[in-house]
Length: 317
Image 1 (cartoon, rainbow, N blue to C red):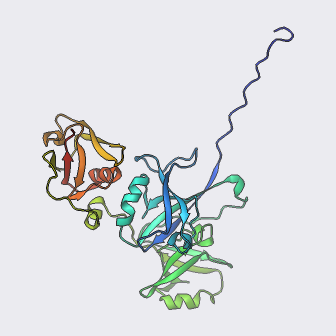
Image 2 (spheres, helix red, strand yellow):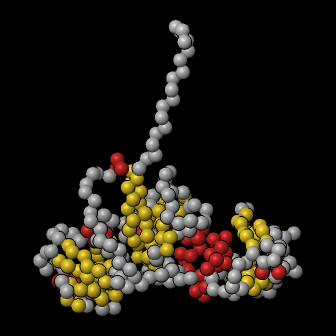
Image 3 (cartoon, rainbow, N blue to C red):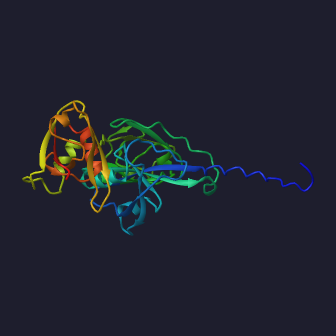
C-alpha cells in the first residue's frame, strides 16, 4: 500500500464474560409465605443452569418483607431460588406452581452471584463432603462464631438458620439438621445444647444428623391441591382420557395469551393418546380430577405422576 492509503484499524477483541463467585445456602420455610416477591429471570450471562428443561428461567428475589422468613435467614434482593428440598427448580413457572402446595418444613436452596471484583481475596474454606439424607456427620468448630442458630423441635435442637459464608455453611451444615452429638455425647436435648455450646472449650466437635427431605412426587402433591376440582363437562368438546404406563405418543407446548394454555402439537398415529381421541390442537383442561394449574404443572404430572393419569382435554375449534 502506498502513502496515505486507508488503513483498517483492527477491531478490539471482545471482552471476556464476567466471572462470578457463587454462594449457595438453604432457607427453611415453615409457613405458607416466604416473605419475598419473586419474578421470572434468566441467570447472569455465561452462567450455566444445573438442570435441563423448562424455559430457562429462575425465580429472582426482587423485594423482601421486613419481618419475613427470607430476610431473617439472610436472603438478599438479587438472589435466585435454584432448588426445593434438594430438587433443582426446572423454571419459574414450576416453582410458582409447587411452592404453595409442598408440605412444610420446606427447604429452599438460594444462590447468590457476586462478581470476582466484589469479593475480597481470601482462602476458600475447606468444605466437608455433603452428607446424604439421614446420615450423621461431624463438624469441628474453632474459636469464634459458629455461624448457625438453633430452635427447639420437640426435645431436640434443630438448625434454624445458617449464615452465608460462615463456619457452619463451610462445613456443610444446613437448615433443619439436628444437633445429634456434642463431643461424642449422644442425643443431647435442646436445653443441654443451649447450656453447653457457650461453655465448652474449643475445638468443639458437633455431630449433626440430616433429616430426610424429598420433594413429593407429582401424584402426592395433587392430594393437597387447593384449586377447584373438575366437575361435569362444560361443553361437548371436552373429554376425559386415561393414560397408562408407557409412551404417551404426544407432544405439548405452552401457548401464551391472556390465560396461557397447554396445547397438543403432535400425536403419534399409533400412540395411546391418539387412540383415545386426542388430536393436534387439543387443549389440556385438567389432570387427575383437578383443573390444570400451568404448563409446568401439566408437564411435571405427565412425566412423573404415577400411572394411570386421568387427563381432560378440550378439542380445538
